[in-house]
Image (tube, rainbow, N blue to C red; front, side, top):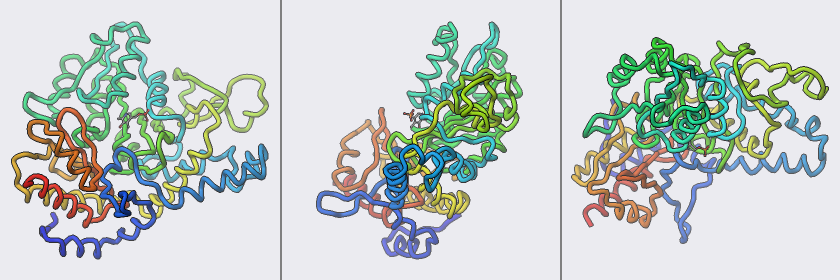
Length: 423
Ligand SMILES: *Cc1c(COP(=O)(O)O)cnc(C)c1O
């Protein structure tokens, strides 16, 4: 698809021809002790801070200082409506309709709230299927939901595993599981982009498979939001959750996004936990009387939201909205393709890439498997000024983020890796 060369001048040229290269200046790039910019490839763990974030948060601090409680209505961005300022842009990022999306709570909390509604076990259909190397928090959440319903978590948990000697998951194997026990599976809950391998699943295909067997299907898109074109509405998934501190650059521990498919927008009889923020906005402050469910994803909110965190999300979403997720993924495929090309050129037996080589089956992350689980390779990379992460048992995860990583970042990263490997 692309034709790359392995010299530095080619990397410089790629940056010069990159229509998004200027966005790097909109972010704070971490530096080492001597003031040199680090090569930051950890945007899949904690995205970098947009320079505009401080202004956005300061605006709310100012309004709080000068207006106090009146800020709910009188702030420049009235707090009462604040989550609504995020909905449209967030919906575009994940490919959903505004009525299907809300920003609220934190990620694992949302996963639980979604399971309150979408995991309704019966005597015969009670199992939950996840991928075998699901993110630990998701696995713990799912196991505790099983126990909460009085189901043995070993008996109730079904794992979609890679084959012996393989790393990636195959759809044939999922089909096989569903043929055998599909009518016992109540919920399929998959990480849309696997955090470890970087495999981006075909959400629509999994949803169709699950629905054909009568299962509810939800996705944790923590590694997908802001990274790939999720097209959540199109996928037909029943629900999805994600966080905003990874590819969405909204700060440590920032809030989560939540998608509930339009077909449930008016499903008032669907079981759920509620609070005053799930109640009709027009009568919310009457503070008396019968509960009146808000339609759409907003109807799953509980509390009035933390404005300071939302201000950071607002600043970040502005960047995504200006560029558009299509443009962003276009650069992403090129940048990651370049990274893959350079790694393959090294042709070194100590490392291999476990992430799918098909650009449609991955986001920006490449997971580099290290022979004999030699962790010192990661330590030396860190010492050389490359910020990546080590994930047990034997993988270095690197995420070139198209918003702020350059082709030269990638060139220098692989150059340092080469020196370490040859060292
Ligand atoms: C990052 C991540 C989490 C973290 O959950 P928090 O509730 O935000 O701490 C959970 N699941 C997945 C798949 C993740 O990638």
